[in-house]
Length: 591
Image (cartoon, rainbow, N blue to C red; front, side, top):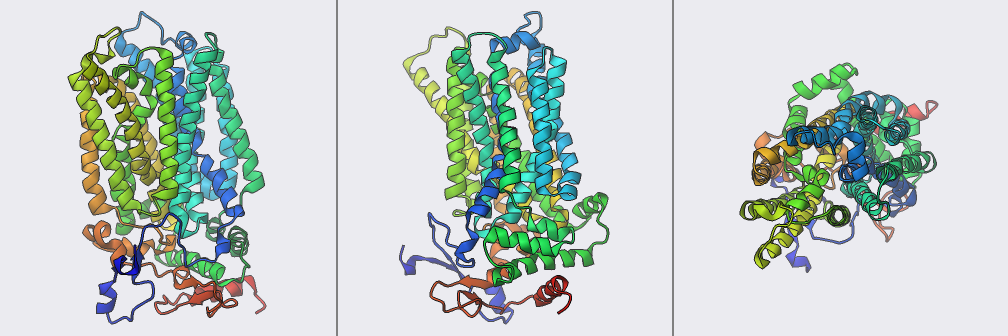
């Protein structure tokens, strides 16, 4: 693409107001396979940051591993015999209810975990909260592997849910707070992708035991024991590699530690203009919030979410709606019940269905990280969401049509014509591709959006409440799907999912703004617009004028700050210099 072909977007509203052109008002849109961050010195991309991001990102595998593990466990002969799933005296409805209780108990516990996270994440900090979760996760796994009756299994899975529910607040919050804005989407998707890394591990663990262990408790105990290993590695990694969030230190009134930790994460001196600019943006937002809203109790934060129009729109119009539409698009139901769904497509036998399920895990894992590294920060949030929903909807529609036309495929010993067999293979491919669409569509947004759009004052509470909605919907979905398949002749449930995704496309167009590449502190302007402009025009009408965005890194030493490597343009200053001065005075009281 040559220079003349670049898409130049000019912000006319600023010119109409009489303001002079700002160098960042014209945004050159050019797709790149590599992040082009001309606002930041290259030092901000370093191994200290990457290792911290890795530890908190891989935390996403907690939920994913359980989904993949339990999906295979419930097909293992020894598991069925131990916990009553092989009881021939139970009706099909009673068996479906027992299976859904076992699989969904973690989601039920996770609802409580998200409520606990409202307190722990802000009280103890991101790192201490993560370490507590790892300990609880290990205890829960031990309870499960020693279970001989379904009651103890329920208890262990419920405790695991308490841990997993907290991870979805801890991980995304930390990642959004420490990541440079140019790769914030990528870092957030490390967590979302780790969900599918966990699913893949769970699928293969069950597939491996099905092949090599013909019978006995170890068929399901060994896969469950992997949870202890994962939790232990993350626990140790949090001590060795992680730096506490500077934004959390600023929020609890410790600016010195905030500046020190930000300096470590960015590999820049504490007095570097980039560090001062980022600290100034954080401090300005905190001071503004202190002036506007009194009270710091959890109830005051919840009240702000409900009563402040711009925050209310973000919570109900974006965060909650993304969870409702995402979870009822059918993706998690496919993850948990994939062996049964492959059976509907004509795959027969325990080992073949577990093999197909393991392949599904690989597909989702690869597509999740392809999305993280090559889509979410390059195409942007909106385009990735459009593409993901569209692909997922087409694939689920095909699967629904296949179940409608070839309902006998699930019958043992069914004789299918060559065309029906070919259609069955395409139906399996549709399941795989629907997972691909999900990973860079709804899945990326459901974790990213809540950690990016809320003010720092209510971010942890809002993200916890969002994840509460997340697990309520997963629980309802996992409980409902077996009954939906029975009541709606299998295919009806998938037509329902298609309808949800169609609504999702309209929602994405009108409500979801493009926020990739923006600083967290620049979100307020977008959500001050009328609701009908936020999604369609928000990014254009409200450019990012945070302190960091005013900086431009230059390699030739022609800048006007910090040895000539930084250009600073204060044309659109928000009078934020006072916050830098306040911070410097607070750090150096003798000056």
